[in-house]
Each structure stands twice: as C-alpha cells, then as structure tokens.
Image 1 (tube, rainbow over the protein chains, first blue to last red):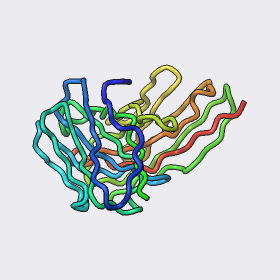
Image 2: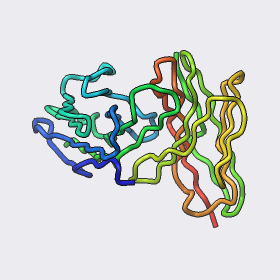
Image 3: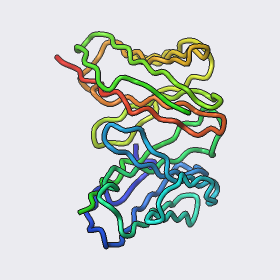
Image 4: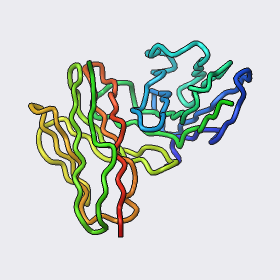
Length: 115
Length: 109
C-alpha cells in the first residue's frame, strides 16, 4: 500500500544530532498519528493530529517534537535522543480521529538507531 | 487498566487452520481490530468487529464475544505468505486503540 509514505526508511544518528522524520498521506484523511514500535512490545501511541490540531500527546519526552503543517503531512523532529529511543517509528492516518470502525492506514516506518 | 493479551508466537503447517486468540480489557469498548504485519513492512488492516459473532473474509475470519472480552482471528488454508505478525487492537471509549504486542505466526511447509 502506498497511501502513506514515510522517509527516510532507515536513520542512524548520534545522541547530539538533530533530524526529522517525514510522513505524507495521499488518502484524503483528516487524522494522522505517530507510533513507536519496539521489539515484542505493543505499539505505543505518541501523538495524534486531527484537522492539523494536536489532540493527543501521550507523555512523550520533549526530545520528540511533532509538526503537522497540513492534513497530508506530518513530521517528527528529533533532538538529543537516547539509546532507548532506537525503534521503528510508524506513521498512520485515518478518515477522522475516532469514529468506530475506521481503520488506520500505516506507512512502512522509519527504523531509527541511536548510537 | 487497559490491556490486550495475545500469544507471542505460534507455529502452523501450510494448508492447515490456525486460530489466534486475543483477550482485552478496555475502558469502554468501541470495537476490535486485527492487523497483519510482515517483517519490515507496515501493519495492514484485516478486520473490525464491534458486534458479537463471526465475520468472514475469504480465508480469514474474526470472532468477537463482548461478554467474555475475547476475540480470535481464524486463518484457513494457510499459505507461506501468511507468515507474519498479527496485531490485535481494542478501541476504547475515546476511540483510542489499545494494542497487543502481536502474535508472530510461523508457517512450515
């Protein structure tokens, strides 16, 4: 499925670097999500945007900073990350936030490694 | 608290049937989703149940019992390409998804 595109696919960075993850959806959806996926753990919801407004911040450390300039694009800005932040970061979108039965559509993720 | 439980790993034989179970505890309930995730790829939507009973989609079926807080995903006529992780997610009263850790399904010839 190419409806949700994430770049880069892989990222290796040092703890003092600044980088950004990008997500773009071509599905005309109004809600976008950032998740963290670590091995053998449930998906952790980080941020939710609905109609460009942030509606959820699940106690995420400030070294992660989201940005949603429009309904089609979502960024995750990274700064002074820790080794435990190494994980797969998934972006998803859905028609709206909430509304039972609406599936979320995921991108392939960015595999992030912190040195 | 909110919790989703599913087995960590299962093994089945090509051509056989396998049932992946999921039990859930959520604050309120607005349905249950199943997703498939191949290694290195995006999770993809398989099914959604909000009423009790069985929903069939080709080789895959999903069952829900709201009174028991229980669901299962049934895969028939297993193919090698069905080797993947299967994620169970419950929708709570705020329509937030509570995710299980996933069940890795290994298909052997």
